[in-house]
Amino acid sequence: MIQEIKIPRILISGTGSGTGKTTLTIALTKSLQAKGLKVSVFKCGPDYLDPGYHSFVTGKTCQNLDGWLMGKESVLSSFVSASQGSDIAIIEGVMGLFDGHSPNSEAGSTAEIAKWLEAPTLILIDASGMAATFSAIASGIKNYDLQVPIQGFIANFIGSKNHLSIIEAASIPLTILGGFPKSNDYSFPERHLGLRTAGPDILTEEKLSYWRNLSEEWLDLNKILKIANSAPPLLVEKPIEAQAKQKDCKIGVAYDEAFHFYYEENFKKLKEEGAELVFFSPLKDTKLPEVDGLYFGGGYPELFADPLSKNKYLIQEIRNFANSERPIYAECGGLMYLSSEIQTVEEKNFPMVGLIPGKAVMGPKLKSLGYVEVHTEKRTILGEAGIRFRGHQFRYSDLIIENEDESLFSYHIRKRKSEQTIREGYTVSNVLASYVHAHWASNPEIPKNFIASCRRFKV
Image (cartoon, rainbow, N blue to C red; front, side):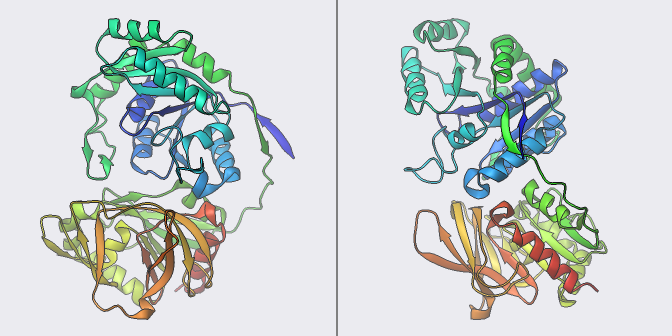
């Protein structure tokens, strides 16, 4: 049964990365909250760091919306579900408006999400050192694909109010909704994987207040709200009331400063299939919770290698857990933690859990970035051989294997730009670890199978 859902919404996109989309999204969120509005924020693409900022500011989990990883139905479902109870939804784009999975396709792009959600779109352009050229760029973007509902433009990194006036005069009849001056003292710091992890030391009240005040002074907030309210109702399939499943499986999830890169959709699907999630900290806890399986996500274990290595009580608990043959699943940073040791960029070595026979070696340059498709070549804790799913890699480390035993590998991974595959997916007994951040909307059987494995090996 199809139903109409009215959700005021806007999508913030730009000409590329580094144009200030995250800062603008945060500024708008704070301004709208100051008006008494409840705001939900979403992030296009596979990124974990920007959603952390938005979750911190809203106090509500920021969902990823990725057309290539999730498909249209899951994107619509996630958006509608997470928008419930909010007065307005803000969606932050990824890269440039039309950049996605392929240069010849809009799959995985912000433009694709804008069309699927029929979201009025605002384009942020770096206007430093330009006047009439701003209009040329804006006109080109607006006319590139008329199916994208572009409703206005915002000029970033401008020199003054007079500079903004010149841009407005040069851009008639385009809708210019304001601009931001360059504010180096209030920008958000970055580290090797992008923005630094969100926290009160980064998102200080001083900075948040600054950006809220700046948006109230420099942006036409009333017009932006009017644009958001012009969004048409979404036509979505009314969800069938699923019978609540018995919570007869507990999965321990590593979650702290070192491990916090997870797709909220993965958690949701685990819960829907009857799992209870129990969070613990590999940094601080000395005992594991009483659970039937373990899930280690990505993060920054290399930045916390010393305290992780020194927490020998928990390391032994994890080894004992593995020896009991209960399932352990790990991604990226989790793989590094389960390896024999981590070698930092400074070439310092720290012993880790040692369930995967290899050393995670950090490097100064990016080792892998982009979407991947996974095909399992043998049975794992995620199901039988032949399962396919999609994911993303973003890493600065390599796993140096001590002895490349054929039994260690369970995945064939194909990068989106290549037909060649590489072997990965490291398995030892009921431990499965990989550099792939998997999105389980690409194959909903995976959370079911993982829970089934946890139930099968319950102690």
